[in-house]
Structures are given as C-alpha cells and as structure tokens.
Length: 318
Length: 318
Image 1 (cartoon, rainbow over the protein chains, first blue to last red):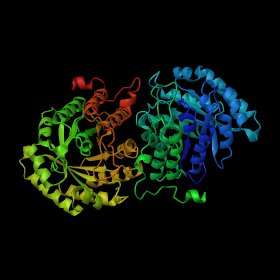
Image 2 (cartoon, one colour):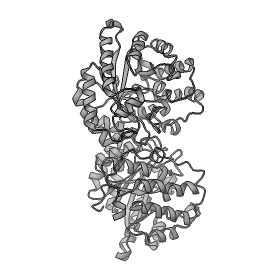
Image 3 (cartoon, each protein chain N blue to C red):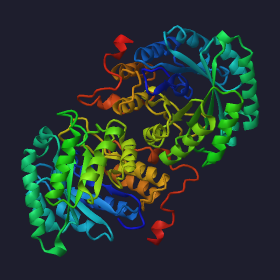
C-alpha cells in the first residue's frame, strides 16, 4: 500500500458481479467499466476469472480484458483462478495478481470447484511452485482466498479455528496475501473481529483482505468490525453487483461507493473520487438493464458540505 | 432495562415510518401492527406523534392507538411530541413516555417545528414542569431528542460540541433520557463514536438512545460504532419505513429485523423472536402496497444453524 491511501478498496464487480449474470457483457463495455473506475481512483480491480468458458461464458474474453486492464497506468490487475489450469492461463496473460479460491466449508468447496479441500490445497501448492518457476519479471503475486469463512448455506456455522488453520496452510504453501470471504453474507461483527484478528495474527506479516457480501444488511458493519482489528484491504462491487452461483440467496457484494463513502467519512483515505465513482455506475446501468443496482450514496447523494479524507484535488494531482 | 435483554430495540415505524406517508393507515391495522411486534418480543414502541391532525392527518387517531397500546402487557408505549400542546395531549392519553424533539440545526428546527432552538428549549422546560405537576402515578417519562445531531441537509456538518451542549441543557431542564438522532443519514462511524461518547459522558447517568437512518447505507455500521462506546438503546423501523417530511432524501430508518439480527448474532440479547418479527412485515406489506419495504434478513432468511442470543424458547417462557 502506498503512503497516499489508508485503506485499499478493490473492485471485484467485473468478476464477482458478472459471474452470476446470464447476460454476456460485451468486452468493450467491460473495458469502459475498468477505465471509469480506474479514472475514479480505484487502484486494484479483479477483472475476470480464468475458468473454462464452457462453465462461465461471461469470461470467455478474459485474455482481452486483462490485456486492456494492463494498459491502464498504475492499476493493479487481479484475476480469480479456481485451479492450476486457470493459473497457467493467468500467468500467460501477465496479470499482476492471481486470486486462488477455495472454501473452508468442505461441502461448498465440492459444489464450487468440484474437489475436496485437500485437493484444493494440493493444487494451490502446485500453483505456488509454478509461479516460483516463472521468470521473475513475469511472476504474479499469489493471493489465497477462503470462501464461506464466516458461514455456509450448506454447512451452517464454520469453526473459527478451521479458518485460521486453512489460512496458515495457504500461507505456508506460498500465498503472498490471504483473502477471507463471507461468501453468503452470514457474518456478524463479533465473529468478524474474532476471525480476522485470529487470521491476521496467524499469517503475519501477510496482508489480509476482507471480502463481504451484504446479503443480510450487515456488510458495512462488518467492514467496521474488520477495520477495528486492523484490516485495511476490502473487496467490493460497484452498485453491489455480485453473488455466488453455488450459494443460493447469496446476492450482493458490499457496494463500492458506500464503502468508499464510509471510509472517506471516517477520515480514511481511499484515493477514490466518489463523484466519479458514482458516475461510473451509469456504464453498468446502461448495459445491465435488468439487474438491480444497489447502494445508498448513489441514490441519496453526498452529504451537504462533505469533505472526503482523500481531498477533492487528489485526482487532478495524481 | 431488565436483566433478560442486553440491548433495547424500540420500534418507531408507527410514528417515524408513517409520518411521511400520504396514505392513512386505518386504526385497526396500526393496532394489528403493534400487537404483532409486541408478540415478537419488542418491548417499546413509539406508537404515534401528538401533532395537530391538520399538520399530519396520519395521527388523527393517536388517542385510540395509545389506548390500545396501553392494553398490551409489558409494552412501554412512547409517543412523540413537538411542543407543550402535544405534551398536554400525551399526558392526558396516559402514555408511558413522551419523546420531545428539537433539532441541533437551527435551520432544521425552524423547518420542522417552526421555532428557534431557544424557543424549543423554553418549551421543553415548560413540558418538564407540566410533568412534575402531574399526579405521580400518571407522570410519563420524558425523553428529549436531538434531531440532525450528526448532520443536516440544510446546514451540512453539525458542530459536535453543540450536540453535547444541547444534550446537557435538555438534561438540566428535566429530561429522563436523551435521544441522539441522525435524522438525514449523514453519520459515519467515527463521528458516531465521538458524538455518543461525548453525550453519554456529559449527561451521565441518563440513558442515551441512538436513532439512525440508513439513507446512505451506513445505518448498522453506525449502530456498531454506538455499541462500542456504550449505547444500548436503538430506534429502528420494521422494513425500514421512515424519513423526515422536512429533510429531502431522508428515507429509511434502520431496519428493525436486520438490527435485531445483528445484535442477536453478536450475542446481545434483544428479547426479540426474529421469525415472528419478519412475519409482522406482512401486516404493513398488505396495507402499504406502494411503499418499498427494505431489509436483508426478511429477503435472504436467517442463516442455516443460526442461534439467537435470546434463545428460541424465550418467547414461549416469557
């Protein structure tokens, strides 16, 4: 994290938001979306998933999307990978960061990536080796995500010690960063504090990301809880797009605009220009006309006299 | 607060939710709403506002609604009053608690109750005297609410020292409780912590309530922030009904169901049966067919394996 921001906000809408939508968004619109968010000051975007196009046709243009994203100055380009095959495609695309994902819930892991958790871990180890064998200048950072870490629609509550155990195993297997995800929106602030404090302590000094869904309305309260125990990296989705194809009812990542508004209101610099970010919603609104767009700040507007922590002049001088 | 709950959740929908709705809800439906929430374990409800029926026709049946509410066992019945005339009607109705309201924002106070803050304070002093002169068995508790305490659509940011100053003056003038309200949904968690810590310290040992609107999506994050500095009393509205007729865009109190879900998830007992509370939404849904109902938990359902802090047997044994 550079010295001009206090909290990193990563946009995951182009991946998490689009993966459950049947309508294929044209590559040109995806690119316009990335451009608009980067211009608003979003410094990292998960732009696609390297999954077989037969499984998720939405990402058939992953290579083209990554190629454009890499041309945007100062943008960290991340892509999700479910397995070794995805990692190979990701490395070949020259993406900056690969986000491997597995579930703490055995049942959800089987549904989502068709394998046991041990098989996922073994795959992760091979991915880490593959990256180590890659020429250093082309080596992506490797993040490891733990889905359903705060509850699972199939298994219910998830043992908090299990989350820490898998985080440690992923760290030991070569993860550069850990992502802890409330995939189905089960988290509450008390559990968030316990789980994130535990994971941060166990994988130190690796950066730990929080990935929350707002399924039950607690998304930003959970962000606050995570902030309290030291999390400074958050995933979110423009207009709250998102969900999981194998977790019923799991709709809606936390809303990027509302997240950035909360952080900036609290005096935490995100580097994001809220008005330009709100403007970027128009791109997805015009393409995804049948998809509900969420978010309070886009509807209600910024408070009168609002002064963002990042300062209104920041983008001009950036 | 009795020993079986950790946090008091007060339903304000019948007052704050209905005051901006043109459609007059029949008295019988209001009564059914109160009955359903009380049966779900909600122990305090703001049932109406004692304002002239010419100004808000919705509350023309205030006396009848209060009369029924007083017949519900163990329910604390509260009513909003904007002035001395309202207090006289409230005392005559035998309501348990009167919630006087004034704004910290001078401009909002003029818009909302047509007088200066000093005039409101003078009125409050007369109300406190009127209550002291009332026969003890018929004396309602007197709460004093500070609207726009965390920001104002007319004035923008509100000086935090002003909030504390007015809270102290209301306490010195005879308030039994203080209500600090983010009337227009401007609050952020950092400001919430500062303002509520300041007010609690300044009016100790008076109870302090938090009244949040979810206008910009930060409602439950603000609840968490308030909990952190010791607030244990929250206003909310079933399905997030609510707003302020003189604050444009100020729609939506925080959602009672989601608030209770968050608290119960965190291990804080509310005494509320969430499933019965969600069921109570049907009453307002059938009456207010053109009003949007908000809330995550009613749509997504309770998490698999969810164990409320209050215990599922509580209502049966209560």
